[in-house]
Image (cartoon, rainbow, N blue to C red; front, side, top):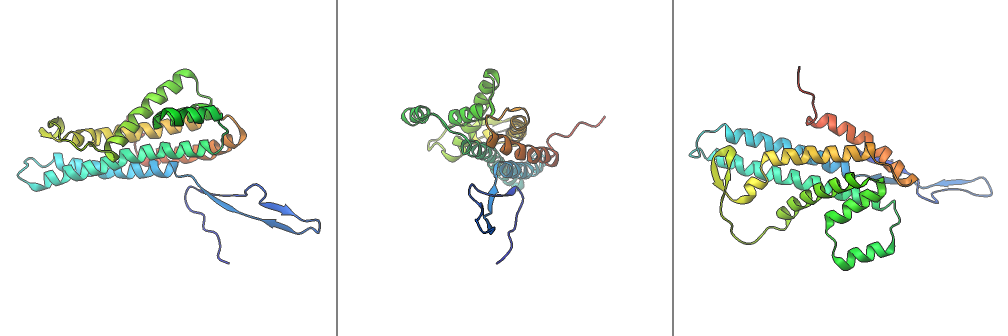
Length: 239
């Protein structure tokens, strides 16, 4: 039988009932692999952000649109920025799933969400609030930030099918389709940095509501801390 390969962000776990000892002293053990994709998607967002930055810098360093490479690099930067922003939102979806799996929610709450068609950002923020015992100010701030993340996600994956007036892309001094401004490098940079910081703060300052949540957060915290150091977004300025 081949060995078990445990990759990055994987963890070996023994499920309930996975370890048994018989009356005759014989034992059996069952091992599962758990994979938390929340830090993975944040890492993916940072990778796309670096790509967006590379293309953006190439674009602004080409003086004239007569050089077709300027437009090409703007397009590539836009695509990478869009993927970076979407990846941050998927990271929040992954965090939601990990917290939700370790909680028991009131049936009436779930019924209310289904009946009212509660927005995704609202359900995600509510799960995080309950799981980590966030105070009113913190939970309200999180709710507003998630609303913005999911607005960008929806603009990318549920694009409007109509035309719009062009808007100014100030950094390149040109009028462009609106989404080239929405998903420009500067916005992607802010989104990736903010998402990573939010998850970091939740993992380090949240108060898990039960033992299972506490165990999960304890495993998430060092992964996010390592990601903050590796992504290069939180480096202290040189003195």
